[in-house]
Length: 112
Image 1 (cartoon, rainbow, N blue to C red):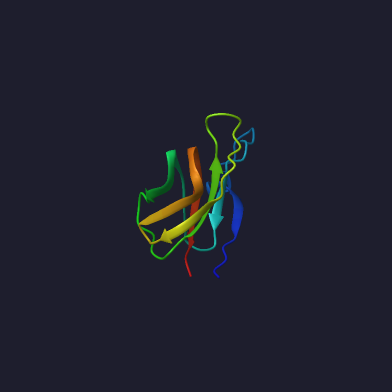
Image 2: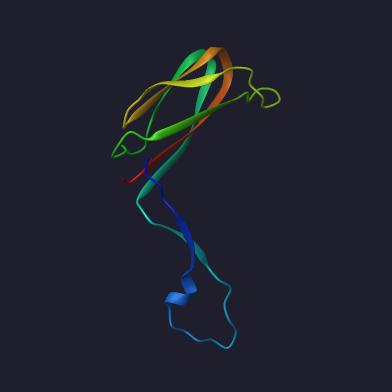
């Protein structure tokens, strides 16, 4: 399992300017390894299987998490969402029963 760490860095410190009044820090996150993250939502309308094609293919098979959300009523879906197939370009999500709502997914790939 590959791990990645993120550090906060002030972008203003890389430019040697000494103004009378100090500027507010402009923070950025810098990772120790290459990482690619994609967030998406799959809309289900009375079906139990949905597909999502990633905007860019990953270099390896990513780690994907899914959560079902009932977008019609109170935001709580009473179904179980799980991944049936995953490749570097697509992911297939299936639910325990047909429902109308969304399944949110997070796909993360970290360089080895």
